[in-house]
Length: 445
Image (cartoon, rainbow, N blue to C red; front, side, top):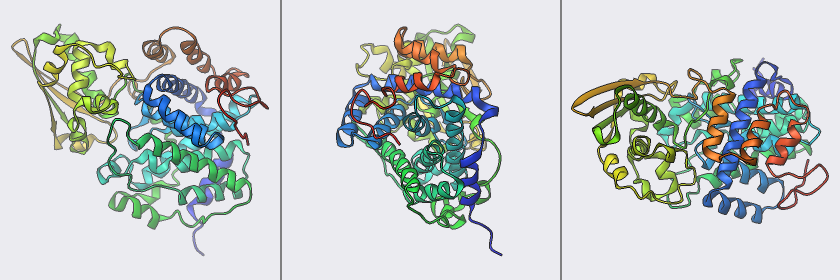
């Protein structure tokens, strides 16, 4: 007798699993997503993308796509290192859109949980973070799947209909996205569209439309990840959401260990930026080129990825690490001068640590002395976790005090406050149930 398709077990999980054991963790990461949403909406790039998506689709799809894209473009949303999936960006906006003001927090968190678990399981089975070296973008790859599970749970899909939602979502999975360039790179648009397609898959399944549940199998996974694929991990019952990292600054995750290491060395040895003669940043070959490929002036994204520039900010004007918008170029010649003294080098010796961690080894020459430091974890990783106090510090640094900060504090109590879902929907801009949202009609499920 043939084994049942993996989608059967995944659909059963998505339709029935409980988030009870990790509700505080999910609330913390939802609040972190609110920081990203509000910071992203304040950027010129985020505003332009949001207006485009909501203008071209003023209904449910455009709204969810816009919110997901805006969260993701900030580079301050959370990430799962072993898969490189930024999972809250593809689930939280979906859960907010498909919830009602009266939705119980437990019901909301269950939907987040199953969407995040399925997205991470699919990414891990397909090849994890190492897919990046093959030109794949893991977050984009799994966005339809995770979004469909989240939306389907809040739609109340039974396992048989959840199975069809996930099957339709797999058929929407994008493969090779290519390199994104320009002042307004299309990566955020494509991410939002992938999330939208997952929502549509759930709505279609709820309406009785079927997909091909046998599509997701070992052959499909190998067609994505080749030798990196691990099909046996698709239905593992290991909980993956506990491995999420919160980013302390606006930066590609691959640069954060180096930023943390430089700041730690400077504090430990009482060094000033002017003391630094040179910095070597050794990282795994998988992302060495990425960290110094494009000059920081190329685009807002480049300034968040370029490691020499980010380290210069960390040493000279650390407050600018928290500037998500990067709208004005800093008028400080010390920044460019220090960035020019930073070299990024591929170090095969670090490859064994990746992708369970995103390490960096720093060799710092300063004040006539040479210092070395290996950084395997940075603040916000599970090994150096953020609590509510640290998250509120991040919110204050990036949003300032005021209503935006208050919204983050309110969402931190999501798992304990009966009215929390209504508050969260208000933060995202949804009006009370039965009324249109603040900007454009929403066809609530």
